Image 1 (cartoon, helix red, strand yellow):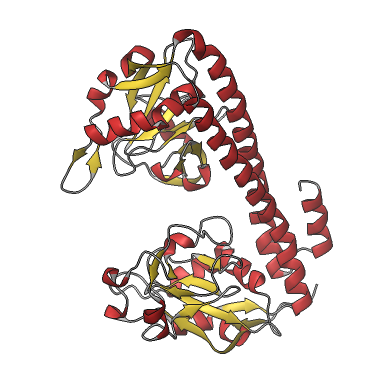
Image 2: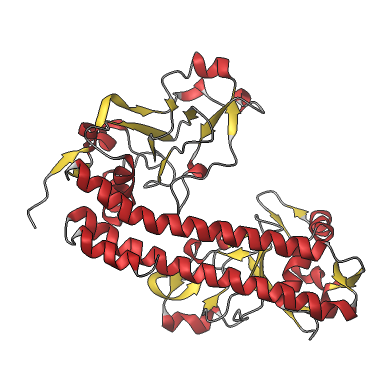
Length: 406
């Protein structure tokens, strides 16, 4: 394979195609409206997938047309984080809105389609070497950030357009399969909630009657590239544990951080500070420590499985109980864990619990299976990505590897 040449990112953009967000007071919370033109913020640049098209704030069309006319993005544009979580990248998707405004913390690129493929540019910025390069070039004054000059000078491997498209298609096949699995998982979680809510005969019981409450560590270990998981509250995704949001700790440190409790399959993991109300089921065959601000419920009743306990936790009555019992602090809101065993939680009548537990367990088995498959797909994508972009592996060889798992 020949040596790959590099060109600065700005050479792959249309003229004046690199644009930053609005300055200073041009866009603030007072400008937000219930409807209108959506604003792209860092939370829309998902940690996995091309874009997270939800949780938008909006500005009026009049505001967008006047003061923010040059700070807009359209489907197909690539968006980068300027300050905040540097290294985030996303592609504005079709089919949602015909235009967007980028926030002060984002920058966008309009790709010259005769020179580059937008998804190829996206994948170049998903390469960890590129993320490291961005961090090394960041301006450290105040909040670490980059600017349009730094962004435009970042080196991009100058593959032929047909090769760029082929690379994007190989990696995109893996991301598309991950997205399908994500939709399957979300549907299964919703079905679990619906099955729990459909139970006609329910009763309120004390949490302590059916489960034990365990607190997690109150500090953070040194994080490592591999080893047992150190779970993060960011991994709690409305019933699903997303390990991609967690870190690792060293094997020799594991006993220290599991001294209070080691999570096991079927435990209900939840946050007692900041992300109150969210919870997830601990999957099998995962060695992990609870993270900071995390606790767990462990069922002690044969008729109440972990999945049943999880959806009781996520149910509307118990969420209301959490809201009523929340202690509002000066910095963060929290749940008083010591009081939780006395709280009331809804459960089916004892004779109905085993059947519903079985149904929910079966659904969560499929959720866990898709999560495991997604981790395998993501690992393959992250292995192939730098090799494809750098030309270290032939596209045909990468295609064969993808065909085996997709």
